[in-house]
Image 1 (tube, rainbow, N blue to C red):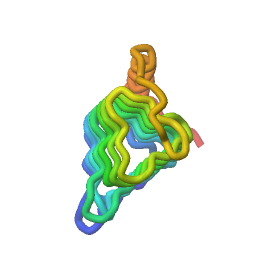
Image 2 (tube, rainbow, N blue to C red):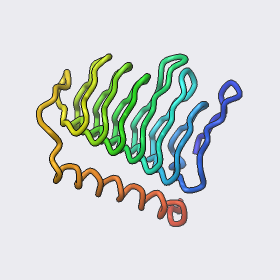
Image 3 (cartoon, rainbow, N blue to C red):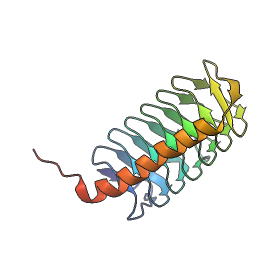
Image 4 (cartoon, one colour):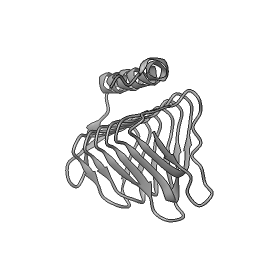
Length: 175
């Protein structure tokens, strides 16, 4: 895996967090426990800092970055889908899902237990309130997140927490 110190700042990665060998982590990035970072993901704490809460997952080819002197905060159990781009400053609330291929621009907040649907674009300086579903370009709130959708998101997040633990012991390159 490519883990880089930048201007004296080193990523903080607990033993229980799995970083795929083809992921890139740079600079001022702090991971919580039991996180998963997939192949091709890039987490750049070179200009701003990035905080990833316990149990969160950053799936394959996602990119996280923040503007100079700002922070991108991901609370606990956040799911960042394949190919999503999240640009801070931002706050992504607990148990929130950012769908595959979505773009989250800076100065945004997605409150707890919300869903930004796949392929959506959240413009700068916007907020998605707690337990809402937003979609489109630009993303607009389309409905409340019902209990069934919340359970689905929780199951998906748990699968990645389990995958992180399994990859720590079972992922072996064979070529």
